[in-house]
Length: 161
Image (cartoon, rainbow, N blue to C red; front, side):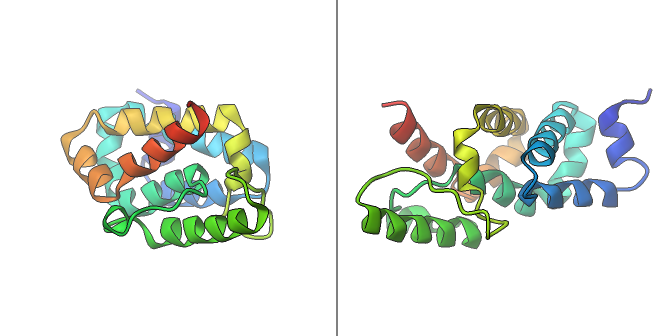
């Protein structure tokens, strides 16, 4: 059997690590394709075992585009990736200056993909990837430790209420 995910992950795991680095690309088409490819890799249970090796970095990169400018409580921040907390603090400060809650584009910082919140296809790919991750008990534990559910709650409250 040969498929797209197996070509990426086998025989060289380093291909997947390179793929993860494209999540912060300034090219929106490359960024979207990267998130969709990661989603497709997460569908296969055997491939998901390899994804776990880089789960911490991958989850951080999946969560960065979902961070919004609603402040988190101190107990909610415990366990969150540091880049997520930093981005949230920056967005909250910018919102205080602006006086409104919304994502602001910042193309000068590769890790700040808040402009991606406006891209429904990208949000969908990220959420579908997270859904694939929760199929696995160990990945559910990792997502819980990284406080993914807190971030998703805030996104839901902001955009769907």
